[in-house]
Image (cartoon, rainbow, N blue to C red; front, top):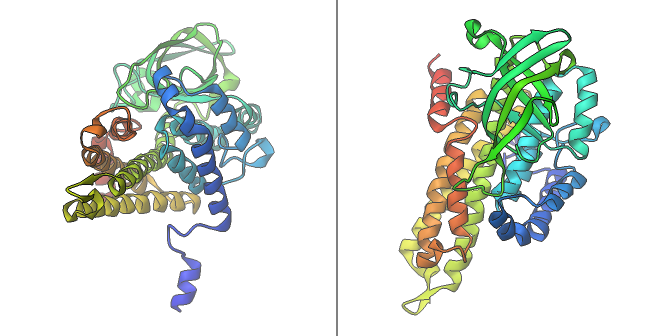
Length: 388
């Protein structure tokens, strides 16, 4: 019986042959194409467009979408593998892929009409970067206290307001935007729209100068009576809150993958250094105090990886992932902070310089506790699920 169960429910980290081949291909891309560009992209504050083109060519910008629209026909688990492997080298490159797959393509594929899916998804898998626009200057964790208004006019809607903290904002040409059609209705007045770059009255604001993921663009968006046709409304009028929540539940798995990748990259760099660096006549890796610290970090990282992989497997099985996704994001971001901080210390003074990679991993880790729902918001989601 145990053998049958093992076959039916393989270990979470046991990958299929297809998953192994996919992961290894992404690893090769990360090492061969991303790593040589990391420093230059960090300095420029921009992901190399040539690298983005390679993401499209390799199918990383439409992993879960069907081949009929140019996608790879993959799974949520494959998205996790891609984001994790890229994040081991550069979290900025990884988040470009992650947002495309989870926050942009997922809601379009799930809630779009057949005509919308054919029109937009084929572009998003070919050469068009997308972005997700929910947050505003005055509504972060209170995500549905939106000030951006959508007013009905003949043939469509007029959007007025501003968005903030929009990942991929500088590169994106297609935006999933949330606005309220009636503030008096609260969250029931929220509607989702798809807005194209170049729309009259719509402009991209300034790019934020950030602590970490500096090559990833984070911008403001401005809407000045921008016209969006009825054909570009995503889902039902007044049901945008449902689309936003469902999408963020999926997106949190991707952030979890980013965080275990960041922690994994830092730990790999630190363990290699510990084997080479000598003090008191022997490598640092031979000191028991250091061994115990590394063992603790590796254990926490493996626990976080299991949570992220489990959430992805549940998503692929069609299960509710609100609780598991929140748990995965919460814990993996906490682990990433602890592990990257330790790795800086293990490098000593060198870890505090830009000559070695761990200071960047440390800076990149912090965002995991903030975007796509702060840690407190994840705790709230988990508490509701546990106490209901």
